[in-house]
Image (cartoon, rainbow, N blue to C red; front, side, top):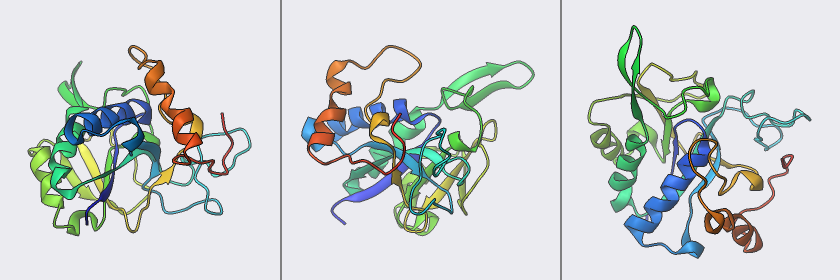
Length: 213
């Protein structure tokens, strides 16, 4: 295919989206109106009448209860999967944990639970001929496991679930989650945050039927 849909999960999706937006710009030379990285949910086996939503007071389609994790979807040329996979694995950081020595984990381990598990989705999953690009980028540092859906948290397990995105599709998150500042570190800037309104106006991000905010 000329354009490959893939998704990546590594803790909170806000910072992951920003990093993939920057990768689209750097590696593919994409301009503001050409970006494809979006926050969303994936890896679960159920929906609520087709809806998958963030935690909300109305209890509509709660992604955690439906077995999904936070992820970021991006459409890229298959020839560039290696570059985006390398970026993904670079998002994990090394910590010194008393009693456990050095660990390699997502950068927000305080967010725990299945919603923040590590996952990668591509058409065909581990059976895809492109899976070898994911394996190469992992460099043997993680256990790549075929995802069956509704997996537990991967915290301290150095495991990444590889999902067949044809069986476990990506569900875009609510508009307010897109192009959001991360809760850690400096803000990404007004130009980045303004992409939300620009993409909504262009119809590239749409209401999901879930509660907003």
